[in-house]
Amino acid sequence: MTDPFPQEADPTTSEADTRPRQRFELEDTGFDEVPPRFRKFYRRWRGPGDQLGPNEVICPVCKVVIRSTRELRPGDRVYCMPCMSRLIVVRGEDGRLEARVAY
Ligand SMILES: [Zn+2]
Image 1 (tube, rainbow, N blue to C red):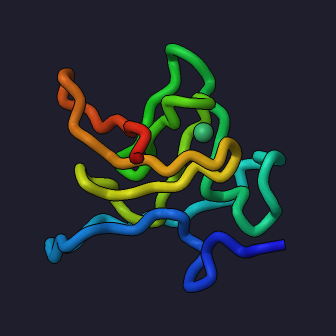
Image 2 (tube, rainbow, N blue to C red):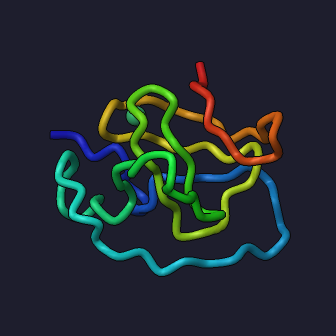
C-alpha cells in the first residue's frame, strides 16, 4: 500500500504564490470512499443548491468536491483521491474556480 501524500495529508499543493491565504478548518464529512484520515478533504456535491467555498473545487471526472485547508487559487494542483485524477485549478468563464484534468 503506497501513500500518495508522504509529506503531508493535505492533497493540495501550490506553485509559487506568496500572498497569504485564508485558512480553513476542515471537519470529517463522512465521505467514505477514501481512508478516514482523508475524509475531511472530500465531500459529495449536493446538487444545484450547493455552494462551493473558496477552498473547494469540483472534480470534473467524478463530481466529488475536493476541499483544501487553504483558499484555492488558479494554478493550484489538487489530487482527487476517489478517482485518482491529478487536477489543476483554473478560473472559469463565469469567474469561479474550476478544476481541469492535468496531464
Ligand atoms: Zn474525481
